[in-house]
Length: 268
Image 1 (cartoon, one colour):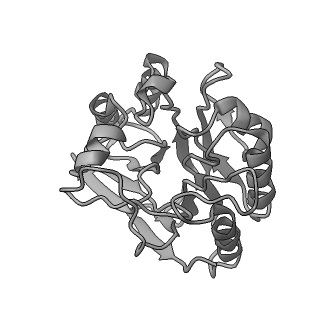
Image 2: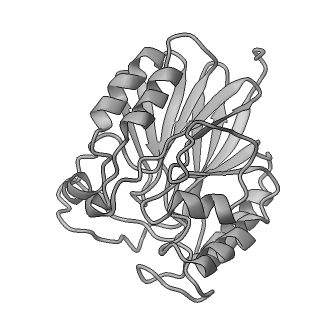
């Protein structure tokens, strides 16, 4: 990597496609919003190197929903990478969604974990989808934590992590009770050796823009592509916030800093 190398990527999440074009969830129709987002991304003034979707491609892992998602996301003009959400299945993402060039980090067909490199920057996708009985929490298996420890060494290229679930508490009652990856502190400790080269941990799931900084590591969530949750400290139950618009993040990875530019857009 040279000092002039910059990587741009678009972070999207939680598209929640359904089996029909007019499928609705949380009072909104996902598909028209995602179609609008794809149009906006394809026409950004600066073309990203890739797009990453951090999970919940669909609401129910059925064939028609994935086919709809694949048809829309295939219109993106750059490589697209996917993370397994709690509403997804790794096997289905592999079957239906076209992934950009990558190197698998697991040989388990039910785990979607891989790495890829762009301009000397390394990107690692983790799969924290747990058994159905802990849903909507996630958990990282010992095998996935071993991947983290192998990747998060002190020396190496700039490193970025993608996952679905938030690793650290968010100071919102209902989110912290329901939405976390259960061994997030173990993940955080495993990442610490790499903090000087770690550019960020990017996740979805919470349908909300949120940034957390701990021990020099940046954790950042992106809005859902169609509907947002409220996340105030005293929120004790799940609540959608109708005032929050769909959105995505345009991320700049420069040799010396990370810039995250949030874009929101009106629902069609």
